[in-house]
Every structure is written in structure tokens, then in C-alpha cells.
Length: 282
Image: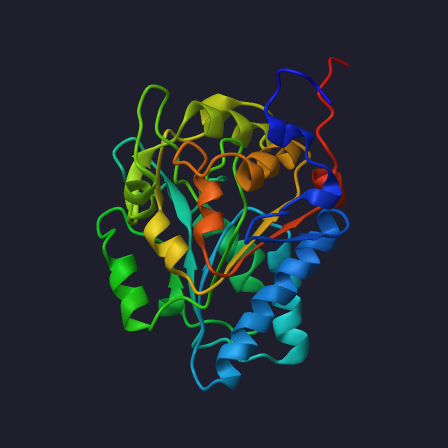
């Protein structure tokens, strides 16, 4: 144990989630989590269809590896996803708060087309009108759509370096927000934190200047309002983050800690994420 460090950093892999309402699953590596996430999405759609309704899911672009797997699964099993509504969590914006162009290399809309929608046989793919991204000119449409659809079956996603879910950034240092107020934040346009822009730059070669400053995100209200929360962590640096989420204080300063207020939340982590963080110079 390291004296002077937050207690949650000392939580063992075996104790992750102990004493919390969040179900923690530890399983394999990045590829295993991608397979599990794809199967979990397919299972939620199938369960809704078996219950006589069309599914509505909130989905991320990151983690990313599940989408080609899911497309292949839909094709091979001939799954009818035409009436499934998929609400993507977020999208980068230009400095004047418009979607980045779909041809932009970092566009989430472009990614979903290339690595998911374009890979599905047209007879099975979600209809174009069911492929939803929050719109900076009509942010309130997301909440109205969810209400019209009778709620969200499940919200899938990952967790950021500062504990964010989607792009729901914590208050800036020196600012405070009550948990109840933060939990009620709806879909909105916002500025990305330095931490988010920095860690996101790592996935594109380390050049922070190409990471947009602005984004639109599905709100905490919509995420926490889903009937299920199914989140995944597959990055080595998330070892400390998941401990803060699960065993630190429930606070707007760590948005994903609000998972612990949800009735049906599950966190799946890779084995190396479950392992205690190796805090040393090397």
C-alpha cells in the first residue's frame, strides 16, 4: 500500500465494486471486451423484440472495436435491426458549434458509417432515420425522442480519464455542482476539458492541436434514465479511474461515480484494468 494516496487506489481486483450496487465483471483483454460488448448490444435488442417492442439504445463510439463485430453478427444471424433506434452519445463540433464534417477523420458520424452501418446488409440495417446523433441546433430532440420511444433499454459506454461518461465533463477546478443538479443535466453543447483533449490525442498520435475544443453530448439525465447502464473499460490508464468511480466519493467531480445511484449498472473491465495501478517511475 502507498501511504498518502487515496484509499480507493489500494482496492484489489477481487474487491472491485464490493459494497456498491454496481456489478463488476472482469474478463480478458481488449478483444474479449469488444466481443462481449457486441454480444450485449445484440442481446438487449433481442430481449426488447421478444417483449414486443423495438429497442432504443444509447451507444458510444469509444470503446470502438465492437462495431465491426456487431455488424458481422447482425449479418450472419440475419438479425432485423431496421426499427432499432441507436442514439450515439456525442460528436465533436467546430468552433462555431456545428458538427465537424462527416469526412473529418475524427468525426464519430463518419466512423459509425465506415465501421458499422456500411458493413450491414441493407435488409437488416437500422433505417437511416433511426441512426441518431445529438444535434447542436436541436439538443432537446434527444429527450423528446426517448420519451416517444418509451425510454432507453440500455446505455452503453466507456469512462474518461476524469471520470466522464459521454462528454459529460466534471466541473472545472474551483467550481462545484450538487450531485442532484449534475445528474439532471440534459443533452447539450459544451467545451471539452484539457484532460479529455489530452488523453484523446493519445489515440491519434499524440497531437492535441487536432482535437476539437467543442462537442455535443447526451446528458447525464438521459444516461442515468436508461433502464440499464453497461459500461466498459479497456485502457490500462483506467485502472485508477475505475477505482475512483467505484470506491471514491459520489460526486460531480467524477461523473461516472453516479453509476452507483442507478438500479441496474454493470461495469466490465479488462484483467489489466482490474489489476491495482502500478504507481511508480519507470
